Amino acid sequence: MLTELALSGAVDIDRKTTLRGRQVRVTSSAAPPDELLLRTWPRVERKPTDAYSLVLEIGPALRAQTLDRLVARGALPREKTTTLGFIPGTRLRPAEGAEGAGRRVELVASLRSVLAENAEPSVRTAALAALVSASGALPAMNREIPWSGGLYTRWRGLQQGKWVRRSRGTPSRWRLRRCSRRRCS
Image 1 (cartoon, one colour):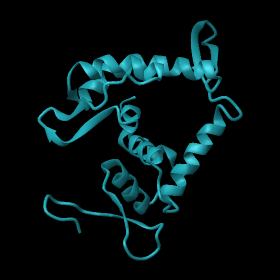
Image 2 (image 1 turned 45 degrees about the vertical axis):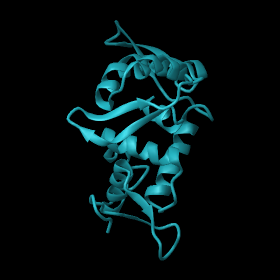
Image 3 (image 1 turned 30 degrees about the vertical axis):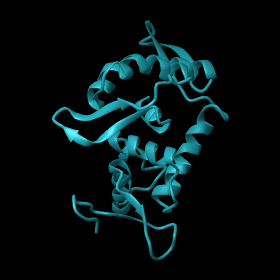
């Protein structure tokens, strides 16, 4: 949700890191139209706070709400199950078709084109790659996106926001710039 608020321009995350991390500040007085974002808005609007604390505070409640929305859309049907024949449980599985597994295939294909084929990422694809990288799920995607050292470097670069276009060579090629306070190499 924090990523979505940042992409929509409703909040800004400071580039300067303090002892408590990067501060999240409201940039717009208008509340977001999305119901899930609207539930997060009062907490973000109340006062600037660090991103880590904000995610810990709003994350658990939003997980259930997000899953409920995906179930309502039909993207993740809930199945009632039993373990050992008598312990009740619930399982979520991606639905077949456009709303379920098809959407995952589409997202993985966009990640693969950026990471393995050096395509220019859209803002949302770069944000998705950064989130997947930060979550530590990169090695689990080895079947869909073959693992390599170059892929890892590109993924970490997107996570850290240090990607720039190359000025020479093929326009679709990217390189990681090492930036210090005074200059980038």
